[in-house]
Length: 135
Image (cartoon, rainbow, N blue to C red):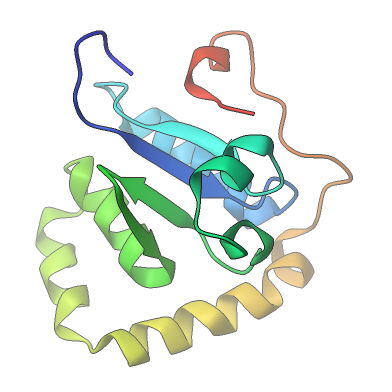
């Protein structure tokens, strides 16, 4: 995080999921202000910072945003909104009830390994990305 910053924004993701890693790659490109940090759900930061048991639920991206924990479609949409992306589309997605959005999210999550692959180990950040990743 930037020195003197009072905001905290950590994206927790399944470090072995191909889709999740593509999402992180996209966020790294979009985040020109470098406001996001990233941590695998399999790591110690997730165990320490998330509510009990949440790090074990690998089916969801989790967004810790200034002390508030968001999951599933709420997390994904809020991350994109915070990065200034999809300004027109984000309003459209929030008109759908969370139950509908999460139904679609869960369907994709159940099939993500089959469709996008599963890695043997968690994502290793490049040297340029290393300061943005937490254990």
